[in-house]
Image (cartoon, rainbow, N blue to C red):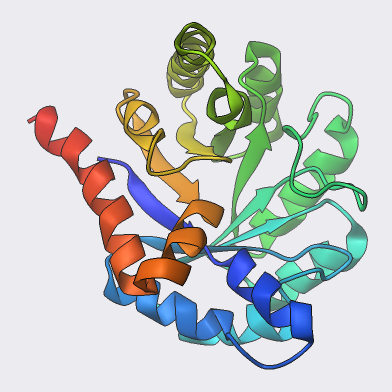
Length: 244
């Protein structure tokens, strides 16, 4: 059964809309843990549009499950990661103009810089995952660069409008996932996953971690954070019971 990493960025989005102190993503992280989250994920963007430096520091001191810091390869953010030492860093692409992450990090094009960042994070005792597209060449280079894991971008699957196109994207994820595992990488998935579409992805063989945020926060607005996390956890756990 995949572990559930709950991304709490959009709790901070609500807070930053008013530049106030609530809702506090640290509180959301505690509620997510109480509801069974296996990890907490935050993306410290260069423009600080949601998660702030303070959030990362306090979460590092309070989160009892794995803290996964999503981040670009910019030097400023790398220095923050080295100082706070989260349990895991996931390197992602980042553009100031995007609403959300639009695709995987091109580790082939940025091979030299990514290798440098990975080596420095490893020296600090931090595990590294690379957020990439479901592409064998990207997976090959991820392995060469020394990452422990890859997180395959599931956005194309989540955005598919027909059953045929959705099945095609799921097949791509399944094939790329198998290739990653064959190469000794841990397999993570994330982006755009929601209550309506998560089960097929959670059922892909050897997926060990799903990172899900916006859908959980959106449901939490209506039903509460603990219930929203529990409902997602239950959907994922069904796949584990089915394989027993």
